[in-house]
Length: 105
Picture 1 (cartoon, helix red, strand yellow):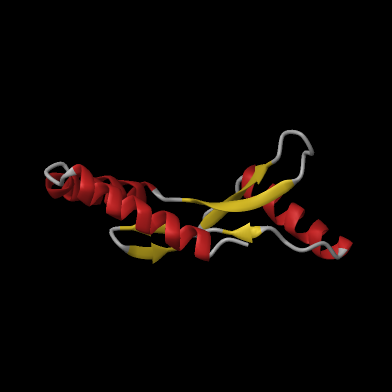
Picture 2 (cartoon, one colour):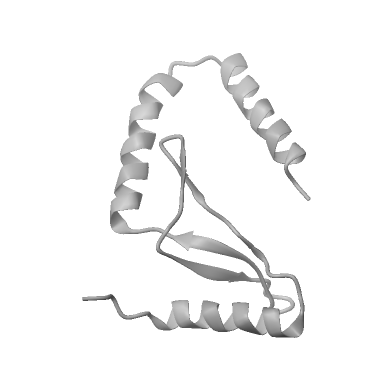
């Protein structure tokens, strides 16, 4: 049996349809990174700018199983990460900043 859509998912679909009708570019839809793999969620929800009321991005609404997998992966990664030095951690964060800036609009 198919799961019924909740009000939040229906509202997201309405907002996306309105954006297409108005000819405005649709906000980005983001994915998740779980245990080093980029994954999608079965549904997304809009993130609203409180000053304009406009949706500026769609983010994943992960399943319980995806959340459990992410937490387990984080716990496993922490076993080695906690022993890394300041310099090692800084290098990882600096690389993350570099990649983020290279891929930003």
